[in-house]
Image (cartoon, rainbow, N blue to C red; front, side, top):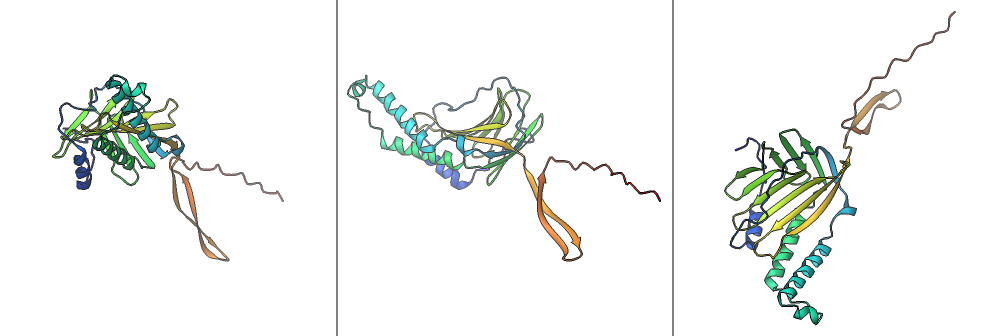
Length: 251
């Protein structure tokens, strides 16, 4: 087992909510078959770009529309010919809505700070647990705990973090870096044996220059010690100024 496995701190309340949706597992859903790694540099500070995010309501509408069309096709097209859609089982609808609510809840992270080396990555997320992974030489990193199996690693150029519960539930987060390195898309997906297909919500993040704040103080004759709040980029380095030549008038 790796010294730095991908770690998801799952609360008891979260587990109870997930298990309510779960059924008997017949085959592993959402299983990742890792492609050859093409490691990209995700390091830096990232903030959510709300203008590029998925709408939960729109995704739900599209989900149920696809489901009704699929049910209609399975009924030999009778409903399609009469321009009517098949009704959806109430339990299935409740499961899908619960999945959407859960995915939306864990996708509210507005700021991420990512530190990355050749062998490790640490995704610190504002207001929630961090995503950590130690990259194996090949394939995906996998570790087990009493509640679930945790999987992480490179799938081609994408980073994948996955939590597999024994009751047939899978929660996955897939990070994709844009070609110019300035945007990250985080696709959060939930699989359930009680739902006909997984539910996915995309969140977009833009790279930004994180600034640290502090107080700058100076002593004045009139007001004494005066302090002001200042900020500077964390990666900004203070470059010493060259001494200015002093010109003195000759007597």
